[in-house]
Image (cartoon, rainbow over all chains, first blue to last red; front, side, top):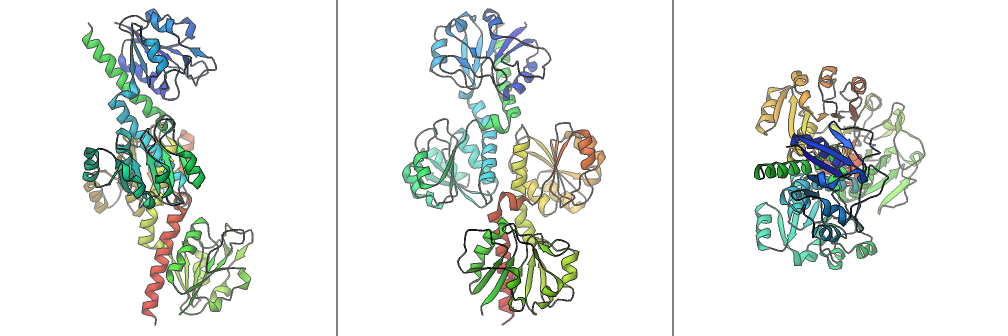
Amino acid sequence: MNQTIAVIGGDARYLELIRQLHGLGDVTTIIVGYDKLEQGFTGTKKMDFDDLEPEKLDVVILPITGTKKAGEVEAVFSDQKIYVRREWFERLPYGTVVFTGITNQYLDSMMANAKATLIPLLDRDDVAIYNSIPTAEGTIMMAIEHTDYTIHSSRIIVAGFGRVGNTVANKFSALGAKVSVAASSIKDLARITEMGLQAIPLNNLPDYTEQCDLLINTIPAPVITKEAIQQLPSHALIFDLASKPGGTDFDFAKQRGIKAILARSLPGVVAPKTAGKILADVIIQILNGRKEITP
Amino acid sequence: MNQTIAVIGGDARYLELIRQLHGLGDVTTIIVGYDKLEQGFTGTKKMDFDDLEPEKLDVVILPITGTKKAGEVEAVFSDQKIYVRREWFERLPYGTVVFTGITNQYLDSMMANAKATLIPLLDRDDVAIYNSIPTAEGTIMMAIEHTDYTIHSSRIIVAGFGRVGNTVANKFSALGAKVSVAASSIKDLARITEMGLQAIPLNNLPDYTEQCDLLINTIPAPVITKEAIQQLPSHALIFDLASKPGGTDFDFAKQRGIKAILARSLPGVVAPKTAGKILADVIIQILNGRKEITP
């Protein structure tokens, strides 16, 4: 059975995603918000948002960022404003899947009474782990660019041992840095030690920052405190990879003259093709799974 | 016994080198070609070249690049032209050591009848291996910047398994790339295999480039031939790390529309502080060794 997919908005990552949707086989792909893009895609129709008929859509793919507050959708390849509103979502039929990167209050409330199903891709462990690879590579690039010493032999503290922290610690260690990881759970502290890295109980972080060239935060909570920053050597750098507003006391870092950078959306910046493929692979896997279940 | 060291010219790496010379203990350091530099160094005198008395120097440190053809010395922190000529070299006393990064015909001929000893630092295995670390990190930075996919999972061929090739292959492999190394000697091909990488006999390189996203050359000879480039996929990149003019048929790469970059002096660009420390460590080690030998 032919499926109709509407991709509404998106950035450079979505070019690869759209290309990969062919992997699904029998699909019609409609792209909205790509009017400034000169390149074409075989088997794909460009369309204006107002010409879409939501009743006929099997799959809707929103941008990684979901929607803004008023339902505006980010579309970097278009100057047109696209708004997706409650009545539009409610016209989507039962069985339709709406993919977004992240969800928010607006999207959740729009979908509350809709018949379609919302799937926030970045909530999934697999997507988050795959995405942590380009995130770590982007962090490596920043570390090489912003310092006058090598990653090799430098003293790096990673705050957090979740899906991103684990990968970042691994990669910097593989490049010969002396890596410590600050975490809370005894399970994480044991795993960090097993990996041959120094385990730091998160509460004691300020006791360790005196011996640190690069402090990388991955925890979306205020963990890089005044006390932790106070002890850093003056040449140290802070990279904050946690989602906005990060977990660093940026005001205090500035006051101490320590450069602190809130890095945003590194996968889309350093590896849009890989990042698009990661999303496509998971979307294709989910849709193929559904096909098998619903006859 | 107090030693007098003259640092003549140099770039950002030499700031760390000058700082580290204190490690030698009882030294007087004179720096020439640093008049535009605002920062000062404790225990260091700025001087004009013409005010130097070569008869009183125990150590002379020339730039990494040595001299240009007419004896001109590169000094990025000065607008003055500095020329070091035969009569100046010949006034240096017996026992004086002249350090340079690389030597050339001019320097060799200047020193032919001089009493002092010339030591080209980059010829030394230890310096070349230490320097290969920032070179590899600079290559990683370029790979992340210039591609829209991750290093992880990408197919990389390194041509050459010398001091640089070995380190580069190691680091890219540590980041999860699929690394192959092209080399000539059976010893190298065996070691490459032992490391879990794919070994390619250098002569057969063109048979393997069809499956390559990034081709990194480290051999200072024309090994990245038309035949090797012909087979590369159109999205592939070439980084040439071999000293000028590199080992790539750049004209043919351009004709095929394949981006090929001759990377120059990556340690000085990405990690001047580490690169300066590498030089300082070796200079200090050599001079301390001499102190022990000559009473």
